[in-house]
Length: 70
Image (cartoon, rainbow, N blue to C red; front, side, top):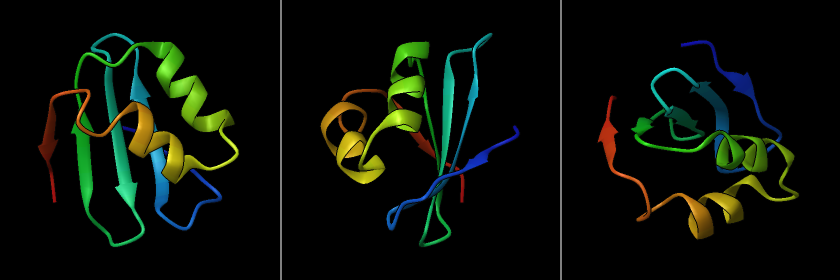
């Protein structure tokens, strides 16, 4: 999945597959997670957020099922 770089101290890049509603996040630690059943509006909100880390904590983490990729 192609990911776009984010200007964030917490999240290095984010990618989204609209066909499967999968959001893939690479954190600055190097870890990669996939989040499932994520609506496109959440991906757009993450990219537009003033703080991607805060948006993640408030709107993604513990909301959508996830998988630790690496």
